[in-house]
Image (cartoon, rainbow, N blue to C red):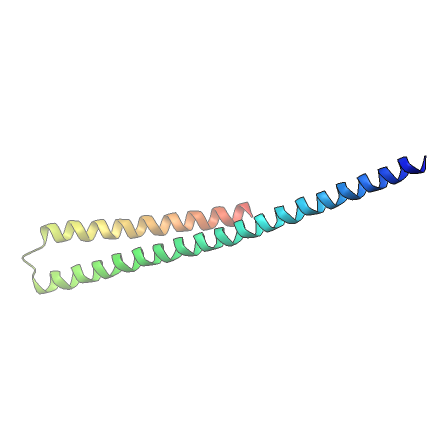
Length: 105
């Protein structure tokens, strides 16, 4: 009877240690995933800021060039309109993402 009881205790201890190991491994994996997600989000923010900055610079350059050379306005006006539309689309997208994030969290 004592041998069975000792065996049960050892078996329970082994299972408990196994469960603790599994939980610890899962926590480490989750922590790595959170760090990776945070890095991915930061990268996406920097890319978005870069795109927005480049389009703003291009738009200002187009306006400046249009003032210097008013005769070149056909293609430049189309490009300027496209940049403005892209900026508005990006702004709307980021607003929608922000609202969705706020409402879902």
